[in-house]
Image (cartoon, rainbow, N blue to C red):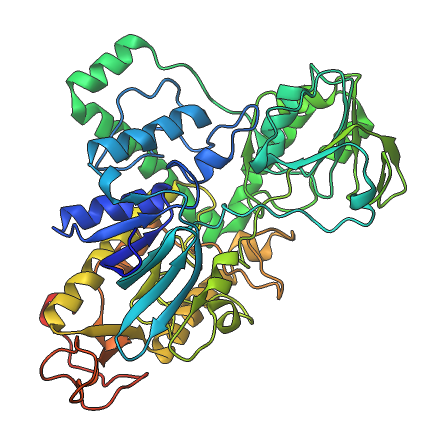
Length: 522
């Protein structure tokens, strides 16, 4: 990119959120945008997570864009390589390649209150943008716990999201730390090849059978020839999950039936009473994400596997020590310990109108307006923002709802005319957040008796949406200008740098004058 490049919209990240934003901008007739990607290819978390057995736990026909159905999914739950190939396909079909800027990690984004645009420093140069759409995603930066003595470890250490394919685990003694969605996929894949596998489990997950199968050629042919069948399949998958939502959000006691089925699943696979006790959670199912696997429990019963019902507490040379004192000699440590979800590193790199970073604004917890915009950060939005996660359905549904909001946000700027910016009003952000948190109180994520990555350091659930995807789509269909301050650029004084619009406000404002609602977006 050129040093003084200016674009109307800068999108950060090229996963589902970033590519979806790019497609929507083109559909809105906007071609003056770039997609800034720190890596060398598209894919986001589906590029970074290439560990053995990596796959999605949402059916493929639902875990894809509604505007880009894929009749060629090879399985009902497709693997990482197929999802990544799908995203490459989307980039090609929708002609996004000219907009992509690879190897362009964002180092800092700073709001210019005079010119009403964002100054963006990347690893490949500088640019400015009227609007920033941050689509870095919550599952992009791995979290490795600070274990005393980790610097003394003499073997290999890596995170599941940064899998070292050059290191051969065959015949090695391996410690797997964590029992989340990645770990339950990794364990069955590596167990047959390693000499010994020691699994460090702080909290056992609830695991249900994975109803997965290959999608045959005839079935794919039908989807190709009759596209409505793909849409119908997606609609059925969506509808089933919409009906399940109330059990998670309003009536957690109804999940007791599912919990009994999950216990039977453990009993069928694990005959040893002591091991079965270790693997049985003591919290309501659904409090943490319900995991899907047919191979996890059987792998844990194999003679070369030890399940340590305690977290990793210390490392001494080649010895790993659990909090309960269990010790094991290992050659490699694989951390399946999740991501920086409620403390996303990108927040340290966004400096708003008042000179504060987004991380500082969110130091007491993430808050946004309709999961998209934050007070004091004009013309900045996020895809998969606070309280937009799901506990039982496809995040693509939420992303597409946020793309509706993004599109109307840009339209409203057009309607306002001139050089303008929209800044979420603190009162509107607080009102939205208060409603979300009030609804959160009776959900299984808050009442189920577990500690999960849905909760921030203060124990507040700033991650999950406490309702249906239909409700969220309705709440993000249009931008309400009554929830925003409208900022205008100051007039250009004689001899000053050109660029301000005629008829602009005579004084710069960090809190702009509120305008009446525009009918198109009210």
